[in-house]
Image (cartoon, rainbow, N blue to C red; front, side, top):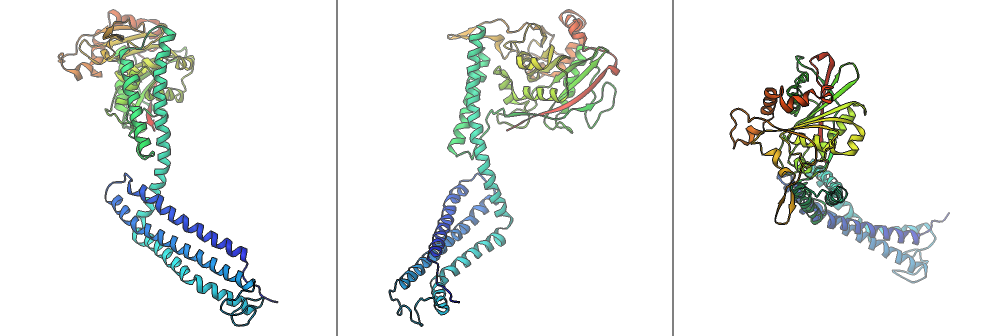
Length: 501
């Protein structure tokens, strides 16, 4: 049985594949080198990785060159086969037993010898170059190259996510500005100065900065400046009530026997931050069942972090500005998620209570028609919170508490509107009962923290809730659904709330 010579079609195909592989190695070096050189990976490991990459890049280029040489050698052997098959002479006459290409076994062997002779050096270079590259990766760089390549993969995925997120930020800012205009057209009330400054200027400008940074770095950098992200909420964890001992570091919720004791639930929620199950911020949900079905008190703390870059804690500067813009902040949406996960029935009475940013969160939720479609909000109580611009419906019994020298509840400028070069006074957007309490003991006019302190508000209410508007609010039938002196009628949980990018 005779042995045939080279399959010319397969030889051409192999040459093309070798050439294509050569280009791939060269392209890989060209694409990765500028990304690695400009990467924001700082520190000794990053510098070492960039230094080592120069060697690896040379190995990639050497492998590319070896593959190209092998491709050329294969094409040369194909040409020789074509010459021999057509009867043209090379080193000897076609059909001779010494060097020609024929249909015999010796002729096939001669062809193989020619192939090895022509491509042997290139193949050896390819093997040596590839082997050196692998050895260098495995022995010299070790885990660093693996981490670096993993980092590159993460950067590629993160870049895509950053570009999408930046675009969403800008669109969201434009949507919010459009929402202010729509509210003006539909209600006849123009947006307040606070809403325009926080939502129409600061947040929109921050979105533009984020988008600019992401686009100019192909998504490698996203500063997340004033980026409120997306809400998350943890499962509810049962906590004690009244004199019950603390559970997993969480203090017990006071029995809601008065307005001051209800506010004590906010104080407990402040303390929950950083505890088991509530790593960032938390709310308390307290159920009071006096025999006709439960009523739920949702207590929301205020700001616990001050930063302008988005973090996992939604009760921060970012959340403050989002709330002041008149839109639902991530913190507000996280509270809604926590309430849903706690299983609050849609027809059960709900009282939202919050201090500072927590009060803004409570007010914004109560003003949101979609939220009220899920929950039966009957009462809102805020203290130290600017809510004059929040359109809480008149059917929600609302109490807004402030100290005379607390500047925070006055940050909405009394719901003032822009009017030419000055401001135009405007009535409150809601029917809240506003109560100005006596100044806290020991807090002077310039004591910003003392006048705003949540414990000081609890003390002020405790000393004054037996008379006046406080007593009227406490004794109102809607509020009485949440007040009891019997701890057996009370259960309470804490739920972590957070933010993700």
